[in-house]
Length: 279
Image (tube, rainbow, N blue to C red):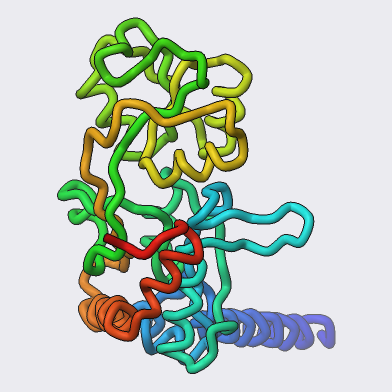
């Protein structure tokens, strides 16, 4: 009789324990500090999230000399885009050191922005109509143009020389698209990043490398056995990319560009990294 009386009590305790455990799990509040946090975190604008977090998270290149290059010895990332990111952190948070730099490539940068892994893309990104469907852009902060990098003894002089030639490019870049349109008889080989593409060029896996002229100039500076040919055959206006619909952050970034140009800070950075003031 006693065993029969104890059985319902045991079941009651078990049921109550499961119910309380389930309630506890269901009421956990998702963290708003992570990039992909949902709910209220996603409803907030980027500027508000940056201020709450206490740092700006910028997506930058690690393999692009002059704009964003990581020093393997020191671990520091330096370049024109990096200094722009620091200036933005100073404008929003009052301290240029309150910035976290995350590596992006031409292929990964838009997904990382859309996923909330980064607040902004500052990574030699050309403004195009196709990309405008996925992200919002700041005003133009740099004007580049696509060109070709070849060995000094190469017979290639420009687009007209590319028939049957292996041309190296980077995945997700406008350069790969452009070269297919402008030199349809060329064989285009794509790599994940600029370092891999330049290494392949030096190893003879292709006869030319194509991307924006200023990026190619950075490569040439590391190895003077290469030079640019063919001039600039496209216009590549760089913009900083922001999540779609975040008008307030676009305005904040445009305010930065204007203030840097008005104060002369932009000219100083241009001369520091690119050797001359902008024309």
